[in-house]
Every structure is written in C-alpha cells, then in structure tokens.
Length: 122
Image (cartoon, rainbow, N blue to C red):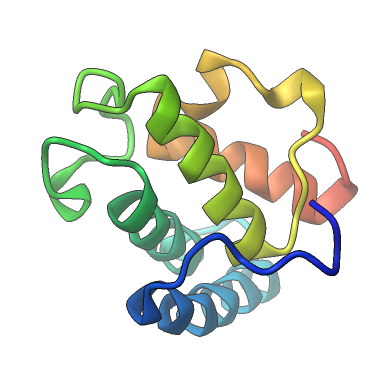
C-alpha cells in the first residue's frame, strides 16, 4: 500500500483500535511465545476482524481455531481484513500469503502476522 495513501477506514473506532493493537503487538513481541503473550496480538486481530471482516457473528465470541469462513467471512471481507491487518500491525502480506489458509482462523492470522513481524515473511 503506498505510503501517501489515506487509510481506507474513516471510522474513528477503527482508528482508535490501531493504538490498542500496536500496544498489544509490542507486548506480544516482548513476551515471546509462552503463556498468554499472544493475547495482545489476538485482541488486535479480533478488533480488525470485527471492524473489517463483515462476519455474521461477534468476533469476540470466536475461538482462535474457529473457521472464519463458516462464521461469514467472504472474499470481500477477507480483502478488508487483510488491509486492516496491514494497517494495525504495520506489515504487508506478500502474494504467497494471499490464500484461504492464511485467513481461515484467528490462529492462522496470528501465525502469519507473527511471521511477518518477526522475520519479514511467514
């Protein structure tokens, strides 16, 4: 996404969630992979999912391994979700991650984002 482009989300609640997600990502990165250290990243993903995913259910009620497509995620919602995640976590999804498997669950998204943050690719 070009740096000079305005975010596609004018909703103020989404803009406010950016700070919460970034703080959660920092806490997650500082804590490693043990215990509940993914809580901040998962919370950020849930926030973007609720705002951009167009799900038929509340993102907060989903288990991290629930199938997001069964919960109502469409191809259009997936594009919005990807753009929201890129903004939230300051990453860019490479073409190799633009597939159904990457966005099938909160856990899959968490793993992909973690890989992008940690090493530039998942």
